[in-house]
Length: 316
Image 1: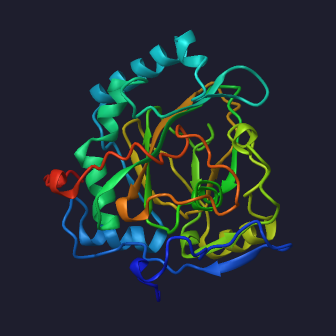
Image 2: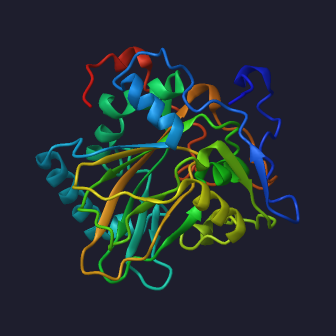
Image 3: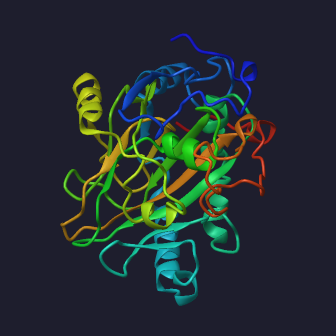
């Protein structure tokens, strides 16, 4: 895939215009996926090639059961805290008052436990290797999908929103989802479209003011059209991420993904961290609206997890 070096384009140039045309459009990706196949790190050459081809990498049972038990206890503590639920970082389900997501869990004032997980060298090292740069947390959250009540997350590319509403200039970010519960095919697991990261789907509809206040509960703008989704799925298929607690999913910021609702008795929850390249720090939103709050898009408190600190042995 022919790409344009990030340093050759001004950060304010909109390489991926979206929500500006009356019809959806496929745009060619002009950024690398793996920025340097020779970069040292915990991932093997085969794993880097798989990530580049599919747009994601699934690492089953990456964290041991004892760690996952600790993380689940921390979620229970956070979910039971009235103080936490009153914070703006807490997002409720669209049709009732159960917690849907809790943002900024990498911040010690919310969870010292999850702050340590976000900085874990085994995870951050993989992101730094793929992006070939120092990284920082762009966004973090706990996603909860309780039994019988967890609603769907419709198909989307995270980068489309981060670009349009947050001002992320280029596709140089990696997401990590850490499964905290058993993910079955029937309790609303993450679904990914292999190969979808190689094209950008420009969406339609002008971004409303303060869109995040509704989109975090149910997204209406930045949602791909059905014809584009059908084309992507016909080309790449759909992969359900099923696996035991402790499984990690690394996926490119532009990989199309979503999940169904959970009408089973079995809850589904995960930790979610986004590692962005320091060379890809946010500029003004490309939709010409006010930036979203810091708890959604980290603009100022950039604490790099440097590659020099990520000199660790391979774990996978």
